[in-house]
Image 1 (tube, rainbow, N blue to C red):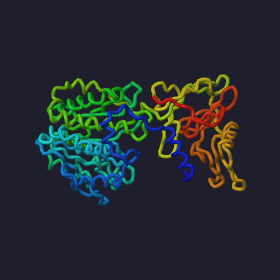
Image 2: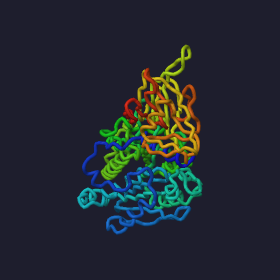
Image 3: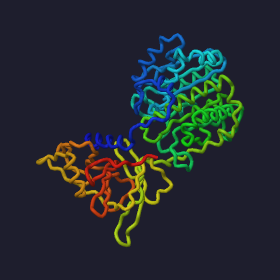
Amino acid sequence: MNRLCRRLAIAALGGLLCSAAAIASEPDYAAYRQGGLDQPGIRQADILPLIKQLQSSSLLDVAEIARSYEGRPIYRMQIGHGEIKVLMWSQMHGDEPTATAALFDLVNFMLAPEQAQWRAGWEDKLTLVMVPMLNPDGAERGIRHNAQSFDVNRDAKALQSPEGRALMQLARSLRPDFGFNLHDQNRHYGVGDSGKMATISVLAPAFNAERDINASRKRAMQLIGALKRAVAPAIGENIGRYNDTYAWRAFGDTFSEMDVSTVLIESGAHPRDPNRQVARHMNFNMLIAAIDSIASGSYREVSLAEYQSIPFNRDEAIVDLKIRNIATGEGDAAYTTDLAMNAGDAYIEVIDVGDLSNLTGARDFDAGGWRYRAPRPYPLSGDSPLVLDDEKYRMLLREGYGYFVGDAEALQVETEFPVVLNPRRPQGDTPSRRHDATFLLDDDRGVRAAVLNGQVLDLREAVGKIDVAAE
């Protein structure tokens, strides 16, 4: 894909996912929310100034515990001096930054002068250790794996990665009673058959293949039940639970084997929240609730039924865009179909066609009464460069052109709307899966709308975004 097409595709992806919508938040959260971390990815350069600043705190002990494969420092932050040990770690997958931001929010809250009384209620009971970015090399690349191409979370037994060794050495020296394994999950997870996004998912990992419940795992389940109560008023319908199939190589299951009451928290998507700030806020709430519940022991009063009532996650239940009731075909070959579209790294494609009532669209549009129309290619000529402003673009779309082919240098883009250049797999006479999410929609007056790399545009009066509803 050439540079212009990639730039335009990424811009369209931003339009698809919409702007963040704030969840109803308490005034105190805004006061402690660390600035500069509301972004798709967090690299070590984003947090090093924060760590340096925290090193001067008299309440927090900050120390380097190891170096990554490429030599980047890995830090831990410690507070409290109690007998109950709690270990929290985030971003062991480099492209999963949500809880990293939440840990800095939590630290801001813990160190605030007005929280001295709250802190005094638990700091002689708990020793809390936080590793805010275990895999800085992966974070630098924006990828899941480390610089060795290892999944650090599958290195708990072999310990061939310096990041995995650092976490294991910390756990062996600290001997935590509780562990918080903080991750992000893909945005396509849903909560059971509810059609709701799994904004937060949880798990008390198994310690054996039989998935037995011993005293340690029971504590983790009870604690998760308490954490569920803490966030249910805000996102009760958006909380899911992972299947507890035993994963021998994973750190969560390995720590469970080591008698650590381990809590997995996975941050997921929420409507109109591209950078997962809702999940970040819920992490903040859950971690504060965890500190309170562990220090007081109140989690012991929570029934296992609280944990067991959380619906299981359902993978691929949510798609980025769903357009329903599109008419296509002619005569006896006519039919009506739904289309589901997901975004890749730089493009958006149709991933499913047919009766898609089993899927929920993060963005959803009913095209009832409109007909599918295959997009035509507009050939670019180097002899006469095309100046593509809004008026010219509207005219070409109404004439049935949906994308451009040829030399990018022959196209001068002067419109904010997505432009599809040299698509990988253009749509044909009928909509097809694994083809690009670019096509036209007709009504009885001609071309009514255009879907350009997953963005729905109204063409009737002037080019403009159609208000595609978010679930």
